[in-house]
Image (cartoon, rainbow, N blue to C red; front, side, top):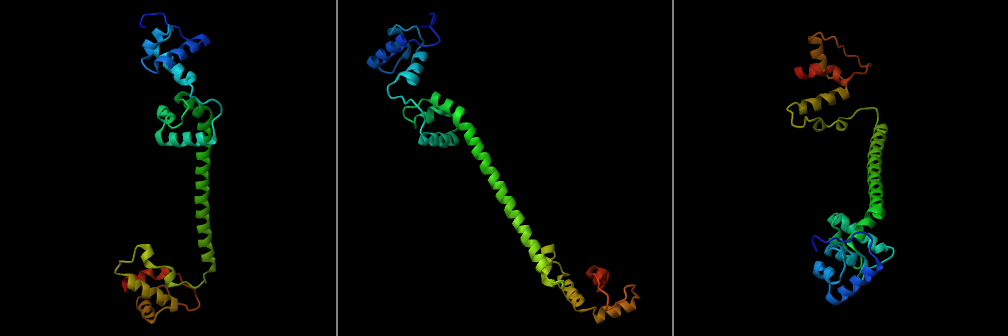
Length: 214
């Protein structure tokens, strides 16, 4: 039918009846030839789409069911916009009809649902993070003012394999028990400006210089 003045636009009721009659007798095949035999001034493609999307007897009309919507959403997420493939899983629905229904009814709904799920995950992570911080603060407030060596494991500071670990450990213990006699003697010999006063509280790091000279 190339070169002929083919009709385009809205189908007339007479054309629908004529197409239905010939498809029923000849079957769904060779649409160019069928259009010519039926006397329709339409292209074979136009006849095929008119039949598949509007005239075939097993078409479903009316609103989509909840099950159909669920299946469309599931298959679209699995296959993407392969509407012809999706239409094979929904008998009576056409690929063009499913595509239009997705774009006008389901796409926005799915986006809102996904955004809501994402925000719920964010809030859940933030809640867990805040809870852990609260637990840490609670544990800190529950500790006594006296420091403990176990509260500051050297391995947490990357010093677990250091050759100075044992010396540091012993040094901290001595500081907790009071300024050691050895350190007193060393302090006097060196005329250190850090005179030990049992009544005074000392910062552990005030004597770090002495540590490395041991």
